[in-house]
Image (cartoon, rainbow, N blue to C red):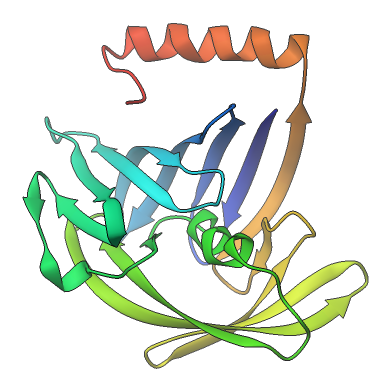
Length: 211
């Protein structure tokens, strides 16, 4: 199965196109993000490998004008390497949080089952993509219940707090003032085969593969 998503940016010009492929033993994600920060336009791409349990295994982040990708990788027992160097401060983190996408909010939400009113705290590998900085952060998600078929999660990280609107599959529909879902499309069978071929051709043209 393959899913394609487009989010728009609520607070500035920008958007993201994301493709998620569910394979037999893992999932692969490719996101392309256009954004503006302090008047400067940016074009970024990230490739992510996930387990079927939604835990991050590896991410490569490519930034226009920067020759080498930024790579963060998890090994056994939730230990993390940043550009090949082990970072003990990240021990025990179960997933990543990228500043440029709402997709990484899906990861902790889809890792566990939720009951109304339940709160969970996750240790995350927080990646400031434009600054290429990594640090551990605790984030708290509280499931507030359903509203017209959508799930509402209170999300808190340090002093920041908001309410995320999420669909039944875990995709963020609304991140108030920041991201809004514009399209979600699922392909199967022949559609998946054809689109996978086009992705492979694109990766070859860019002279790099997913992993």
